[in-house]
Length: 419
Image 1 (cartoon, rainbow, N blue to C red):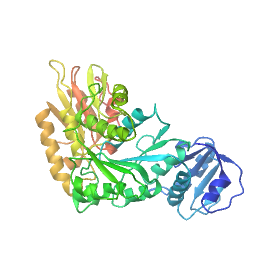
Image 2: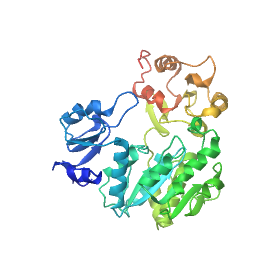
Image 3: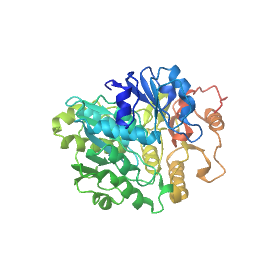
Image 4: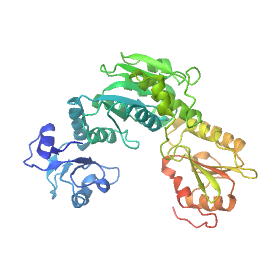
């Protein structure tokens, strides 16, 4: 980002602050503060961010945005709501820029699609893509503030767990082009109307009058309902009918679907089939998305970033075959936020896993049976007694399980761990 005086940022928030310090970055996590950052002390579920003001100052923060009145060593911008102040600042600064927003939502595939789209566009345009999976009510505006401000395009993920959250993100960053990768039962516990409600909430990404074009997956549940939201032109994409380049460096249908979504947006921005074909050959996947790592002769498929029924099914169906004599082993953490779909979806995934692999290790009570592990350390020890060189091991589960730790500390001869 381009440096801004702290007093100018205060003015954007309708406040006066006699401080000429230059802000060169923004942070909402005190552990990630670097010198020159403005620290937004967001209230947390357990601890208020203001409690980390001292740490932020020690790390070099030049100011703090806070809704708490207690004194601090940092120059303070005092606001009624830190989250609202963060969102309003991002909205204001973005409205003053010429950058256009390419917004991506969907129940799965957002981060992978974002990475593919960036790879297709960045040679031709000046592009900023939000880091990691920064797609929440706090991290999306933080992403906007991280950009320099002179980009042609910002590629932003928009995530949600309930109705209205996408609409609010759209009000902060109205998309030039909006995309829905697909709709699944993720966060169904917050939608009494199930998939229909999720589709309608995702389709809020088409609601801005500033949006020129909306893309959506043709076969996703309630596709026609989603396409009816907003006044922008709509187009759809589908693996069943659209041609893909022959040079894609991955074969998993879910990744090819995400590439097709990215290609759809890129083509609508003027990229030719030849340009897309050339760049497609060099695409890479984000970490923990069907990432293959061989360790002590065992091939791990690390897809541990998150899980829902669709991605579970795709991962199980895409497991590589082991070498002769090797076993297919699935290590599956249970899935959260499925609401009324939880029992049936866990039962479906469980049956599929047992039918398609040689051995399954289940973690978490939502699997609904007695043959599951209640702790990661207990499951790791059992896995070590089972796994041998030549086996293929899939790691897949909800983010809360952190199944990638199994790979990080894997040793065939060791079975003593702590969570």
